[in-house]
Image (tube, rainbow, N blue to C red; front, side, top):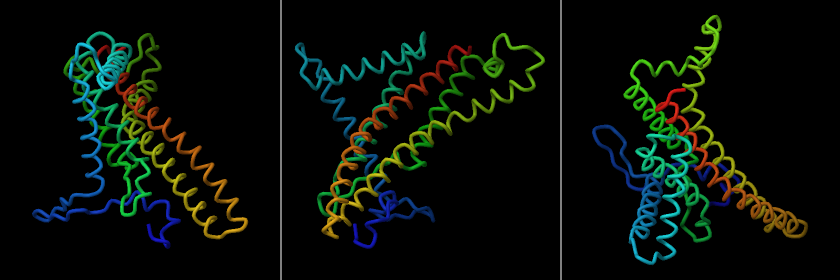
Length: 258
């Protein structure tokens, strides 16, 4: 990062073209965002590949993979209930893609000159695609399983008839807001954490360069960086869990209605 841009906390979110490519007027360039999505997918593939050895005496890697599968299986069984097993592969992929993307995004690669990590989940385009894809599955499952009865989801059981003109629009809006809340929650949480780290990192550099009382600013900033980094690790896991859990709950509504 250049000295003039060191205090720009938004620079880390800039999408850069690594390989420029245009096709029929469409920009199909390979970007740093795409690169890190491939990195995340490769890490997830290696994680599962190493855990599928099925050794008689499982090693640590196999135990981790089996524990991950068991964790998602328990989530799906609890959140979706009967008929939820078929969605376990998607929830597994969703949870661990987001988790790995979050963790890769906070790797301190910038300590090596020329390297800079990229948090793909700090871009609304990525989180929105995940959210709307999940929402599309919910709609498809609900309509396929229940047909027009699926719209009964907007009519709470036992609600008085005279309140329906108010309840149905509220329930419909609440339902349609789901993908936006899914995508925005993950995007905001990851973006805020990275901005904080960038700001405190700039304070640390400026304090160290200033000398004197600036060393105090550097020390305080480093403490904040350590604290925010620890919090970011927790947020990485929580946000992946919340996204997968809410998707499971929405699928429960689609499978069982009320």
